Image 1 (cartoon, helix red, strand yellow):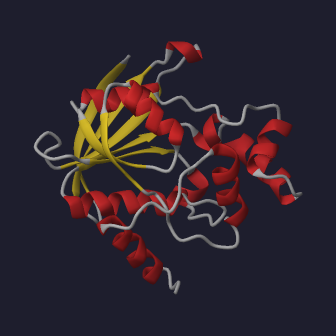
Image 2 (image 1 turned 90 degrees about the horizontal axis):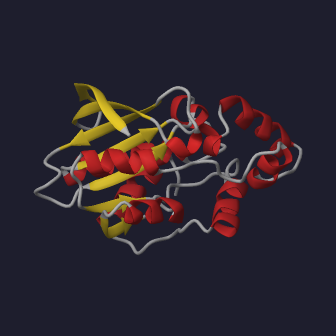
Length: 219
């Protein structure tokens, strides 16, 4: 259901990645236009167990560095983790606001400013709690010939989707990043109502999170 449409060299602050662009249709969504997905790839994905992250688009966080969510810091954590490990991939998929789109996410923000949490706001607007589907991102991982990975995520839905796609998760890496007062309720809601995991056992990956805290001036 996906086709690779471009592949370019992609130098970043962390490493020289390859950037692959895919287009695909998910028949379950009755899509009229193809969904675009990007894959940032580093190193030999078959000779090592690469670090992988499926990252949902977040314009407010990824572009404008909003403090209302942890998306920007999680994306940078993935980039740094992969660069230090030497191999990995980030699949960047366009399902903004858990699939409701940017404008609806901002409407949900308005309701959150009035006291609702992120889930209550989505329901108030008539949306499901989470509209995302990870079939196409998993197909990108399959197209990259990934068989065994270290998955950087706290989201149990992503874990289930990867395993359903026949890809072995050798290790789950925590996507915990330093919080702040603006996103405290958001993070708590993800843990308590969506079952997101947190505070994985410390390892070299935990040292990266510590450096991020220092960079952000946190103690």
